[in-house]
Length: 429
Image 1 (cartoon, rainbow, N blue to C red):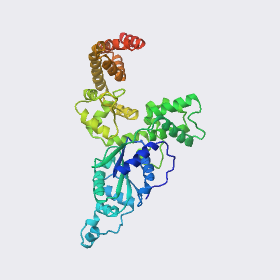
Image 2 (tube, rainbow, N blue to C red):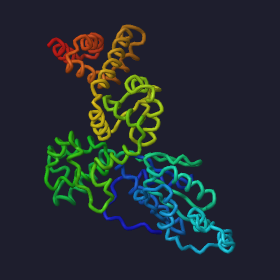
Image 3 (tube, helix red, strand yellow):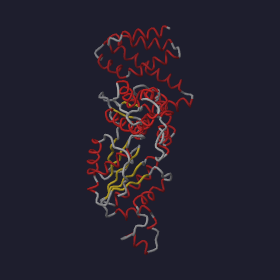
Image 4 (cartoon, helix red, strand yellow):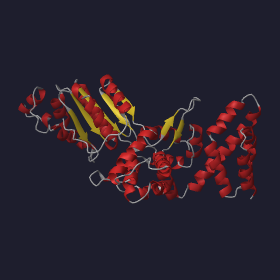
């Protein structure tokens, strides 16, 4: 194979590696899905190392990130496998003798090279050439029965038999371990648990960076000049703060903005529009809310944005999916919304939707559906608070009063009298 030795320690992900090992025995194409900076590349290599014994002809890595032209994908894989000068046999050799151009087709060359080999091929960073990668993978899997492909991408390849393995952000204990490890490399003697203030600041950094390994590593690099508390306090401006990436990685992995820019460039205009508008939600939203604020394009665009790892979809247990943005993506989308000059319009649509939700839910608090109503208002508490903030900020007394009156009984039932008093005072003033 051609896997190179890694230069930094690998933190956490043992359960992911075990799962991927099982995936690779169950399917011939496994795709690791996740947002930029989630650690898909490193995880794919660590997992592939663990199955090397079952691949006597090696584990081979083809890096597609530098490939700009989809037509160049097969050639890039040929080069990675060291197979550009492969001696052809069988049908390929006959084609050469017959003077045909079959041997000039890189897909045929790849198929000839891999046909009788038991090997694992890692296709890294497929998202910007996803259609070309999918066509190549399907052709190779059909013609090379002992080949297994492990792909990394921000969206599925969409090849029959593909098994998808989402790469989730690091849980807090592992995120803190990563920050501790990279922080000690940047500032010798650094310890996450040095004191209570440092521990709290480090936990805040990991939480607000959504457990994304690349973002945490960029934050750790800043420890050379800032304390953990200073970093945590500046995360509202994370795209200016987190810019000290490795000089040897691709430019799009050197800063946090570049990572998200890369994903943004792969979206069409309807997807960009919906992503911008989703930034006005707080604590996520359901499909009805997304359609109310983002328009009729929301359904299709949401599906695509979930596939492209920019929107997180989760079922909270009430039978209805909710959609949310990672904080980094939300901040980026909010900036893009500001650029359009349409923030006020979006926030007004958000306010209108949640005012109506509160108004129509309030009568249910007094009847047999009381528990359903309470759960709905609890689930939407952050959006309702954001709607109230907007109504007060633009001094829309009627909308603010409607919200406060609709929420009053709920606040009383939940013993939130101080909240009720504060909002009533805000609206009165």
